[in-house]
Length: 216
Image (cartoon, rainbow, N blue to C red):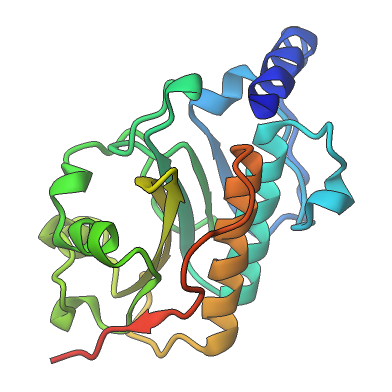
């Protein structure tokens, strides 16, 4: 897989480099498994073309989440993956962008992600789930997401490869319930396609229409 070839090449060249952060960024990044590859934190350039084909997976995931967080004006955005080439598992995030005052979800693995009703919904529907009020949401998010991490509203986009749900992107707002706009949903749709490009499997091959779940 081409993305893996890039990954290992970057790992070799980045071994002796120190991490660096651009101070002007309005969000915080997380390097979980990916910190082994290339410890560089970058700014907001979403398109693959702007980064170049040789940009590392780390840099490209950063830019995707940067732009998504900016456009949606959200509190936090994460990527979860079951992706064996990277040793990634959905119970921990593989990449995260968040506002400086927002708690990280790194290493917070108490929630069995695939047992969550929201993830079961993604598995069945294979389209974007939009929840404007998580406390009243259906399907119900994990209670710990509300009680422990304070999430009030969220969007989830499935990442599907060869008809398998290999992961998803989450966008959280911890400040209040909110109405997600079509612009927000479109930004998440674009981000999902961009992540699949990073995985080397091309754009989304599913119904691009988001599903807004009516709160009851």
